[in-house]
Amino acid sequence: MKLFIYCSFLTLPLSAKTVVKEAPLPSNMPAATISVEVPVADSELVKKWQLESLNRAQIEALVKSCDDKKNQVVDAIAMLTWLVEKQECADLFLEVAARNAEAKNVEAAWYWLQRAARENECDAGEIQSDPRFASLIADTRWQTGKSFLLSCAEIWKSSGFYRDVLTLPSNYDGKKAIPLVLGLHGFGSQPEDFSGDDHQKICNDLNVAFLSVSGSIPIGRNTFMWSASYENDWQHIQQAIKRHGDEVTILHGKISAIGFSQGGQLAADVTASHPEQLCGCIVMSPGSRYGNRFREALEKGGKNSRPQTYFFSWISGEGDGPKIRSNEMVKMLGATKAHAYRHEFPGKSHSFPRGYADYFSIALQVILEGK
Image 1 (cartoon, helix red, strand yellow):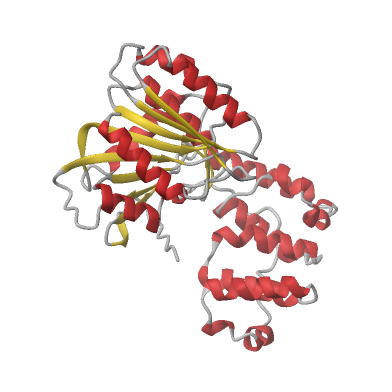
Image 2 (cartoon, one colour; image 1 turned 120 degrees about the vertical axis):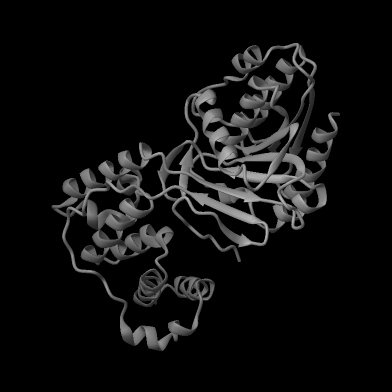
């Protein structure tokens, strides 16, 4: 089980060799505009399910069991309400709001929805299109509530909020220079996508540091995206690297990047535009909201720059976009000194491929050897 520790410009170890740095939460969020009482979990149901003796994973398993039975809606809501009351699980606020709205517990739904907007994230457009929230859309206070959600969203985007996750080799003392790998997540995701046991093992096996960086535009506390400018994003990434200067010494010329979806395209763009700093990248299922900027990035970096290594991959059933985009970039690299590899993984969805950790480990070794 992953343990996420959040802090305000503090360095806290998740394990012996994992460090998270997070900016302070926005301090200028508006107060809730719809006044409702704080919902409380039904004490009888708390006793019935012995929730006080269970951890989050166990409670979520019980909720799933209730969902499967389809006749324990009240029980499931009580479980989740108790969980977020006791453990302050901001990532569950929206789910609790949705379940209450669907059960027509309108007051409770408003309470959790407003907390989600202030403390985590909430997209007013998605709420309007989600049938579970029909009771709130029909409520006479909807326009007031919608304005509140939109205000919170704008504050999140302009807040400069960030979170970095740094994973180091278990026996690393911070003094010896070692390669650094940058992890760039996809649209609407978070840096924890590139963390955990698989990444710790790769750091140990290859003696590299892994810095997973949140997107430059925060949508909420656990949801980020990258900007329309890969140069702005590169500055954002460099700031993250500097924040961890006391924890890792970087081997000159041995920075590489791995990214998925929007982060995959960014990995290719910053590698191409900054060959003096990045030796290669692993690009998984590249995608972008801003078109293909790779040719521009290549021209900025210069075609006669030092050789780099690129790995492109996509999933066979995720649609043609990532495959087409990858092949276009490989073709552009043909006029440079770069080594380019491509691979199609079997599968149906836009996701990390099966065997991701093994692929990543092998590709990274090739990049670091400059082949």
